[in-house]
Image (cartoon, rainbow, N blue to C red; front, side):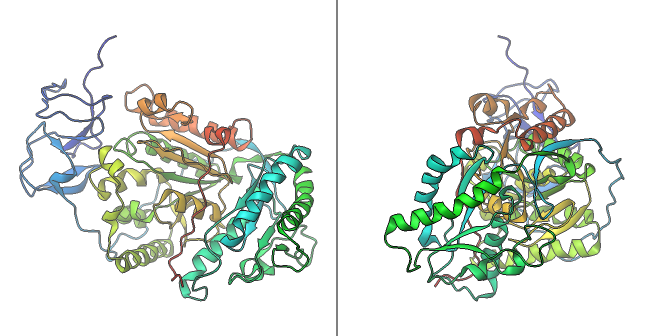
Length: 520
């Protein structure tokens, strides 16, 4: 078998570093076709200096200063995190505001998927019974009941995809009236109303918890079952401390009885053809490497633009992973008000990190660094390209529900599972997740399409990765080709014609709430 030619990838002509593309990296002495000779052995995805870089001089990738050399770095040498000083964060004053006007692209018409139309007008990609919980105390009972529902009831309702318990760690032992308590409460409320749950709201309560069912889901939060209804149906609550419950099995059977009515209504639903504009897509990355910003994330960004052209909603998130590109984002804001909303969310999060005596640099993981990412600045430049090039039309605070079409910035922590939880609350019905190091991440509530940044990862994790974007690095496919493949895959997954690997293996991360309020 012929050994592949040495290959590096340079993101911009102004860059003075590039990343090694070859599987396994390259040994010292390797000569590239341009004549560059490696002075060190350099792992795959790690940076090589394209010119001599003096101590204190900027190191540039993506045409952005990602750091300053701590010593002289020779041409052909390995450039890694221990050799760089990270730049200060961009100030939140004096930013460009709505200065970039993306060219108007023609609408993308005629694309559809088969979805479940809900009474409130939203569309689900799956037909799931979700059982909400007001407090962690009831989690064991609800989990036991769900196992029985799946074994004994679900086979009688073949058009229902699954039954899931919305377990979480909140509800009591917390400062529930603190100002920031609104974040976990509205997150739980909005997750309960996710489009994939068909408007069927069922709650299990303990009875004595601080987060009472009526506070979690007040009448004005519950959608009408029928538009002709004047008021929503009463909240369906199973309270375990109710005097009618005598013993554990009495509680379980009560949950099962209540679930059966919801299952029957969900089972009567059928998929119907709906326009692609009904997709609400959350994009996210985790286990990132230096290829993330070269292959998978640019392909997702191209697909994001396709979705926006089709009239869909796309959310990108992860505050610390876009903080160093805030000037790019405020420039792309559709209006000054949208730009200011982004600035406000960044300022709030800067203050939140400061309370914990850390800053954005706490984001990068050992795996990120092993994958060639030197610091959060470099990581952010690769992360932000998931947002594509469209104008940003809306901003969501943590736990808020999306109510507009187009490209939306949903402010969330970068933690994979917290970000996913908040995007569920925002109303996503389809999730796209890119990874370079590899992760078995999944969600029970929504399909998760996993995109590998490297072909080696896609081959090795062949039954976990849904797409291989590593073909972009080797030139076998273009960003546009992979972006279109992802767009078509999304329509197939949304329609139920194809299951993701995470769905097939039933891999699901726990819901993890973002709770910046005190715990008592």
